[in-house]
Length: 357
Image (cartoon, rainbow, N blue to C red; front, side, top):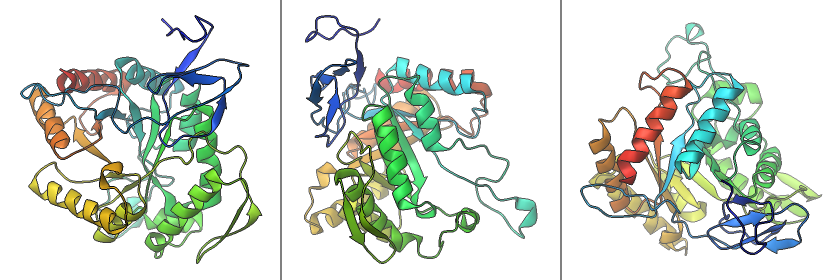
C-alpha cells in the first residue's frame, strides 16, 4: 500500500528518503524530515537535512535490548547475482521491502587473467562478474522508491573526475537524492592501465578529486586548476539533489585515515569492532579535530559477513559496532556458498531478523 501524503490529502505520491546536506529544491517534493513525497507537476519544495541516524531503529543486540540509529545495508552480491535483470530487481526490491536503508555496491571495471601472471593472490579475476555501479543504479532507480544507493567503494582514481561528477549527479537526480558515493583508490593496476590513469599517484590525486567533485555538484560554473585537473568556466547540468552528494572513503592506511578526518563525510573501515578498531576510530577523530571538524559528523559503516557464525554472533557484532559509534552497518552474503538470488534474499532476511530483534 502506498503511503498517503497528508499535506495533499491522498493525491498520488511516492516517498523518497530525505537527503543529508540537501538544500536544493526538487519539483513536487515536500513532507517531514523523515518522509518526503513527490507529486508530478507540483510546485517546487525544499528538502531538509536528515540526521545521520537511520529510520530503522535497529536493535543491535538481543542481549542488550538497546536500540540504535544505525542504518542497515545489504551488500549487493555482485559476483554471485548473475546477469538476469529480474534477479537484480528482485534482490533490490526485497531488501527495500524488508526495511533495509541502503544497498552497498562494490566496483571493478576489469579483472585480470591470473594465468598470464606469475603470481596472483588478489580476491578477484576476469572470472568474477561486476555490474557497473552507475548503470546499475540507473536501473534500480526505476524499480525502487526509498532505498539508498551506495558505492562501497567506487575506484575513483581510475576514472575521469568530471565524468564521475556527471554520472553521480544523474543518479542522484533520478533517485530523488538517494546516492551516497563511497570512494577508494583500489589495488588493481590492470584497471588503471586499461583506463589510461596513473596507478602510482592515485592516492595524491584523491583529495583533489574530492574537491573538484564537490565544486561541480554545488556550483553552476566552475573554474578549477590543481595539480591534476583543470576546468575553465564550465559546469554540469543537472546538478544533484544533494548539495553536495555525501562522499565516504574506504581504506585503512594512515594517510587515508588522515584524508577521511580532513575531507570525508564517512568511512568504510576494514577491521573488526574490537579494541584495535576503537583505537583506529579514535585516531580518525583526532585527525578530524586537528582539521577543525566535528568528529561526530563523520559517519562510520561497519560490516558483518554472513559467514561469521549465526544469528547470535551477528547480533553481537552489530552491538559491538554500535558501541564503537558506527552510524551504518551492512551485511555481506557473498562467499557463503549461496546459490542464486533467492538464497541471498533469504540470507539478508535472516540477518535483519537477527539484528533487529
